Length: 266
Image (cartoon, rainbow, N blue to C red; front, side, top):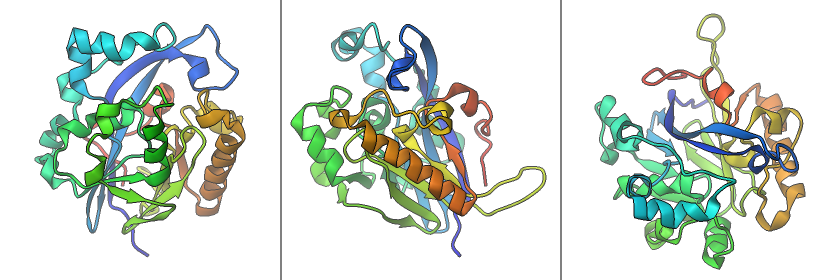
Protein backbone atom coordinates (compact mmCIF):
# COMPACT_ATOMS: atom_id res chain seq x y z
CA UNK A 1 0.00 0.00 0.00
CA UNK A 2 1.28 3.48 -0.91
CA UNK A 3 1.64 5.94 1.93
CA UNK A 4 2.16 9.66 2.16
CA UNK A 5 5.38 10.53 3.99
CA UNK A 6 4.84 13.76 5.93
CA UNK A 7 2.21 16.43 6.65
CA UNK A 8 3.11 19.94 7.82
CA UNK A 9 0.19 21.98 9.26
CA UNK A 10 0.80 25.62 8.27
CA UNK A 11 -0.77 28.48 10.21
CA UNK A 12 -1.40 31.05 7.48
CA UNK A 13 -3.18 33.55 9.74
CA UNK A 14 -6.07 33.87 12.18
CA UNK A 15 -9.58 35.21 11.88
CA UNK A 16 -12.05 36.37 14.53
CA UNK A 17 -15.74 35.78 13.90
CA UNK A 18 -19.07 35.04 15.54
CA UNK A 19 -19.14 31.36 16.41
CA UNK A 20 -22.43 30.79 14.57
CA UNK A 21 -20.41 31.11 11.34
CA UNK A 22 -19.02 27.66 12.22
CA UNK A 23 -21.93 26.12 14.14
CA UNK A 24 -25.33 26.52 12.53
CA UNK A 25 -27.82 27.98 14.99
CA UNK A 26 -25.29 28.09 17.83
CA UNK A 27 -22.92 30.70 19.18
CA UNK A 28 -24.77 33.94 18.46
CA UNK A 29 -22.95 36.77 20.21
CA UNK A 30 -19.88 34.64 21.01
CA UNK A 31 -16.71 35.42 19.07
CA UNK A 32 -13.87 32.97 18.51
CA UNK A 33 -10.34 33.37 17.19
CA UNK A 34 -9.77 30.68 14.58
CA UNK A 35 -6.66 29.46 12.77
CA UNK A 36 -6.50 29.67 8.99
CA UNK A 37 -4.70 26.51 7.94
CA UNK A 38 -3.01 25.04 4.91
CA UNK A 39 -1.18 21.71 4.77
CA UNK A 40 1.99 20.72 2.97
CA UNK A 41 2.00 17.01 2.14
CA UNK A 42 5.06 15.10 0.99
CA UNK A 43 4.46 11.90 -1.00
CA UNK A 44 6.68 9.50 -2.91
CA UNK A 45 5.50 11.26 -6.06
CA UNK A 46 5.96 14.91 -5.09
CA UNK A 47 4.54 17.64 -2.85
CA UNK A 48 0.90 18.67 -2.47
CA UNK A 49 -0.42 21.82 -0.85
CA UNK A 50 -3.96 21.61 0.53
CA UNK A 51 -5.31 25.17 0.44
CA UNK A 52 -3.27 28.36 0.23
CA UNK A 53 -4.52 30.80 2.87
CA UNK A 54 -5.43 34.44 2.21
CA UNK A 55 -4.24 36.99 -0.32
CA UNK A 56 -1.77 38.93 1.84
CA UNK A 57 -2.10 42.03 -0.34
CA UNK A 58 -5.77 42.44 0.60
CA UNK A 59 -4.85 42.54 4.28
CA UNK A 60 -1.89 44.95 4.29
CA UNK A 61 -3.38 47.52 1.90
CA UNK A 62 -5.96 49.53 3.92
CA UNK A 63 -8.06 50.37 0.88
CA UNK A 64 -8.18 46.77 -0.31
CA UNK A 65 -8.86 45.51 3.21
CA UNK A 66 -11.81 47.88 3.56
CA UNK A 67 -13.15 46.99 0.13
CA UNK A 68 -13.10 43.24 0.65
CA UNK A 69 -13.69 42.82 4.37
CA UNK A 70 -15.77 45.74 5.64
CA UNK A 71 -18.93 44.15 4.18
CA UNK A 72 -18.38 41.16 6.47
CA UNK A 73 -18.28 43.20 9.67
CA UNK A 74 -19.28 42.90 12.46
CA UNK A 75 -19.86 39.15 12.20
CA UNK A 76 -16.45 38.49 10.61
CA UNK A 77 -13.35 40.61 11.16
CA UNK A 78 -10.51 40.94 8.63
CA UNK A 79 -7.97 38.11 8.98
CA UNK A 80 -4.69 38.75 10.78
CA UNK A 81 -1.62 37.62 8.88
CA UNK A 82 2.08 38.51 8.79
CA UNK A 83 4.70 38.06 6.09
CA UNK A 84 6.09 34.90 7.67
CA UNK A 85 2.69 33.20 7.31
CA UNK A 86 2.65 33.40 3.53
CA UNK A 87 3.15 30.03 1.85
CA UNK A 88 6.47 31.00 0.18
CA UNK A 89 7.86 31.96 3.61
CA UNK A 90 7.07 28.52 5.00
CA UNK A 91 8.55 26.85 1.93
CA UNK A 92 11.75 28.91 2.24
CA UNK A 93 12.19 27.63 5.81
CA UNK A 94 12.29 24.12 4.32
CA UNK A 95 14.66 25.11 1.54
CA UNK A 96 11.86 25.03 -1.04
CA UNK A 97 10.31 27.42 -3.57
CA UNK A 98 6.75 27.58 -4.95
CA UNK A 99 8.03 25.76 -8.04
CA UNK A 100 8.77 22.77 -5.77
CA UNK A 101 5.03 22.31 -5.17
CA UNK A 102 3.73 19.76 -7.65
CA UNK A 103 0.03 20.34 -7.03
CA UNK A 104 -2.17 22.77 -5.11
CA UNK A 105 -5.44 21.14 -4.07
CA UNK A 106 -8.06 23.76 -3.23
CA UNK A 107 -10.71 22.34 -0.91
CA UNK A 108 -13.06 25.24 -1.71
CA UNK A 109 -12.82 28.75 -3.11
CA UNK A 110 -13.46 30.92 -0.05
CA UNK A 111 -10.96 33.76 0.39
CA UNK A 112 -9.14 32.14 3.33
CA UNK A 113 -8.40 29.02 1.30
CA UNK A 114 -7.81 30.20 -2.26
CA UNK A 115 -6.53 33.78 -1.83
CA UNK A 116 -2.90 32.72 -1.41
CA UNK A 117 -2.80 31.22 -4.91
CA UNK A 118 -1.42 34.60 -6.02
CA UNK A 119 1.84 33.62 -4.24
CA UNK A 120 2.07 30.35 -6.19
CA UNK A 121 2.28 31.29 -9.88
CA UNK A 122 2.72 28.44 -12.31
CA UNK A 123 1.62 25.74 -9.86
CA UNK A 124 -0.87 23.10 -11.00
CA UNK A 125 -4.18 23.80 -9.25
CA UNK A 126 -7.02 21.32 -8.74
CA UNK A 127 -10.58 22.46 -8.00
CA UNK A 128 -13.98 20.84 -8.40
CA UNK A 129 -16.24 21.72 -11.32
CA UNK A 130 -19.22 22.24 -8.99
CA UNK A 131 -17.17 24.64 -6.87
CA UNK A 132 -16.17 26.75 -9.85
CA UNK A 133 -19.70 26.73 -11.28
CA UNK A 134 -21.04 28.04 -7.97
CA UNK A 135 -18.35 30.75 -7.84
CA UNK A 136 -19.40 31.93 -11.28
CA UNK A 137 -22.93 32.61 -10.03
CA UNK A 138 -21.58 35.34 -7.75
CA UNK A 139 -23.94 34.12 -5.02
CA UNK A 140 -21.26 33.20 -2.46
CA UNK A 141 -19.94 36.27 -0.67
CA UNK A 142 -16.95 34.32 0.64
CA UNK A 143 -15.54 33.93 -2.87
CA UNK A 144 -13.61 36.86 -4.38
CA UNK A 145 -13.84 36.99 -8.18
CA UNK A 146 -10.20 37.94 -8.78
CA UNK A 147 -9.02 34.86 -6.88
CA UNK A 148 -10.37 32.49 -9.52
CA UNK A 149 -9.60 34.70 -12.51
CA UNK A 150 -7.00 32.18 -13.74
CA UNK A 151 -9.37 29.22 -13.52
CA UNK A 152 -8.95 28.52 -17.25
CA UNK A 153 -5.42 27.36 -16.35
CA UNK A 154 -6.54 25.03 -13.54
CA UNK A 155 -7.28 21.32 -13.60
CA UNK A 156 -11.06 21.15 -13.17
CA UNK A 157 -12.03 17.88 -11.48
CA UNK A 158 -15.26 15.98 -10.94
CA UNK A 159 -15.84 13.70 -7.97
CA UNK A 160 -13.35 11.69 -5.94
CA UNK A 161 -9.97 10.55 -7.25
CA UNK A 162 -6.45 9.55 -6.16
CA UNK A 163 -4.41 12.75 -5.97
CA UNK A 164 -1.04 11.07 -5.37
CA UNK A 165 0.24 7.88 -3.74
CA UNK A 166 -1.46 7.72 -0.35
CA UNK A 167 -3.59 10.85 -0.89
CA UNK A 168 -7.25 10.67 -1.94
CA UNK A 169 -9.74 13.43 -2.75
CA UNK A 170 -12.97 12.99 -0.79
CA UNK A 171 -16.18 14.79 -1.80
CA UNK A 172 -17.69 16.63 1.18
CA UNK A 173 -20.13 19.21 -0.24
CA UNK A 174 -22.54 21.27 1.83
CA UNK A 175 -20.52 24.15 3.19
CA UNK A 176 -19.89 24.97 -0.47
CA UNK A 177 -21.14 23.35 -3.65
CA UNK A 178 -17.96 21.46 -4.48
CA UNK A 179 -16.15 21.23 -1.15
CA UNK A 180 -13.45 18.53 -0.98
CA UNK A 181 -11.57 16.95 1.90
CA UNK A 182 -8.39 14.86 1.74
CA UNK A 183 -7.67 11.40 3.11
CA UNK A 184 -3.95 10.94 3.79
CA UNK A 185 -2.59 7.44 4.37
CA UNK A 186 0.25 8.13 6.76
CA UNK A 187 2.15 5.09 7.96
CA UNK A 188 0.61 3.71 11.15
CA UNK A 189 2.99 3.85 14.13
CA UNK A 190 2.38 3.17 17.82
CA UNK A 191 4.12 4.53 20.91
CA UNK A 192 5.69 8.00 21.24
CA UNK A 193 5.04 10.04 18.13
CA UNK A 194 2.06 7.84 17.32
CA UNK A 195 0.87 8.34 13.76
CA UNK A 196 -1.61 6.98 11.25
CA UNK A 197 -4.11 8.03 8.59
CA UNK A 198 -5.51 11.54 8.67
CA UNK A 199 -8.63 13.14 7.18
CA UNK A 200 -8.23 16.84 6.45
CA UNK A 201 -11.83 17.90 6.84
CA UNK A 202 -11.44 21.39 5.43
CA UNK A 203 -14.49 23.49 6.22
CA UNK A 204 -16.80 20.50 6.14
CA UNK A 205 -15.98 20.65 9.87
CA UNK A 206 -14.55 23.89 11.22
CA UNK A 207 -14.55 22.75 14.84
CA UNK A 208 -14.34 19.51 16.79
CA UNK A 209 -17.89 20.36 17.86
CA UNK A 210 -19.11 19.98 14.27
CA UNK A 211 -17.83 16.42 14.28
CA UNK A 212 -18.63 15.34 17.82
CA UNK A 213 -22.16 16.74 17.90
CA UNK A 214 -22.85 16.59 14.14
CA UNK A 215 -23.54 20.29 13.76
CA UNK A 216 -23.61 21.73 10.24
CA UNK A 217 -21.46 24.76 9.38
CA UNK A 218 -23.19 28.08 9.83
CA UNK A 219 -22.94 28.81 6.13
CA UNK A 220 -24.24 26.09 3.80
CA UNK A 221 -24.49 26.50 0.05
CA UNK A 222 -28.13 27.17 -0.84
CA UNK A 223 -28.92 26.54 2.87
CA UNK A 224 -28.61 22.80 2.35
CA UNK A 225 -27.61 21.86 5.88
CA UNK A 226 -28.74 18.25 5.26
CA UNK A 227 -26.03 17.88 2.63
CA UNK A 228 -23.45 19.37 5.00
CA UNK A 229 -24.48 16.94 7.76
CA UNK A 230 -24.29 14.02 5.34
CA UNK A 231 -20.69 15.01 4.56
CA UNK A 232 -19.81 15.20 8.26
CA UNK A 233 -21.23 11.71 8.78
CA UNK A 234 -19.41 10.45 5.69
CA UNK A 235 -16.06 11.73 7.01
CA UNK A 236 -16.72 10.18 10.42
CA UNK A 237 -17.55 6.84 8.80
CA UNK A 238 -14.35 7.02 6.74
CA UNK A 239 -12.33 7.72 9.88
CA UNK A 240 -13.88 4.75 11.69
CA UNK A 241 -13.29 2.45 8.75
CA UNK A 242 -9.67 3.48 8.25
CA UNK A 243 -8.81 4.14 11.91
CA UNK A 244 -7.98 7.72 10.91
CA UNK A 245 -7.86 11.01 12.79
CA UNK A 246 -10.27 13.76 11.76
CA UNK A 247 -8.61 17.19 11.59
CA UNK A 248 -11.11 20.10 11.80
CA UNK A 249 -9.98 23.23 10.01
CA UNK A 250 -10.67 26.27 12.23
CA UNK A 251 -10.40 24.90 15.77
CA UNK A 252 -7.66 26.72 17.71
CA UNK A 253 -7.54 24.23 20.58
CA UNK A 254 -7.19 21.34 18.14
CA UNK A 255 -4.57 23.18 16.09
CA UNK A 256 -2.43 23.69 19.18
CA UNK A 257 -2.21 19.91 19.57
CA UNK A 258 -0.78 19.48 16.07
CA UNK A 259 2.96 19.54 15.31
CA UNK A 260 4.33 23.07 15.40
CA UNK A 261 6.17 24.07 12.20
CA UNK A 262 8.76 23.03 11.14
CA UNK A 263 7.76 19.76 12.85
CA UNK A 264 5.48 17.45 10.93
CA UNK A 265 3.21 14.43 11.25
CA UNK A 266 4.50 11.37 9.45
